[in-house]
Length: 253
Image 1: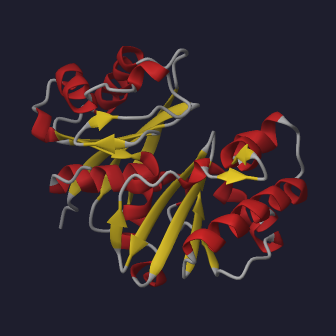
Image 2: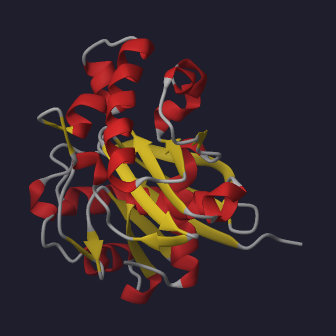
């Protein structure tokens, strides 16, 4: 039997990634296609790259798109690691026009929310009970919070203040790379961030994802906090899977 297919695009600060998704198994069909995020990452420039990724797969159906931004009813209200001109942009309308779709065929979501939705649906069953926070460590830090499997959309816990600094400026994966930190050095920063966050929201579980989750064995065992931690089962593909599922079901925030 042919699997139900969808298509998701994950827009990040460094790369724009898209893939066909098996919506029954919660995995990618074939390889994802990645193009560097344009600089500056203006709405029009990003829309052009998204159209190129969609065309690469000759995909004609609904498209789910994530943004590193607060997204409410298809409109971007913040812009993290993308051009500030995104703020106030009707992303739904922008992508629908550029992709030749109706607005109903485009689902816009915050990137971490999309990743969290995928993990809750297809990942560790523990993610479906209690207060769960997914954190994606990449160019910045994205967050998604769930209560008994229901999303609280557009949390921005990557930007909480930790020791006088925006958390992601000290603990994002990009900081590790840009400052040449070892995994133990970076893990100390992540540990401090998680300690502050767990004291704010008292979660039952942390799920850690993003590109650096591929090397979780180098840093997750070094974390010493009271909250249990699991690594995202979909790793850095969770945003694509969550976006595709949202588009197929007509969900957006």
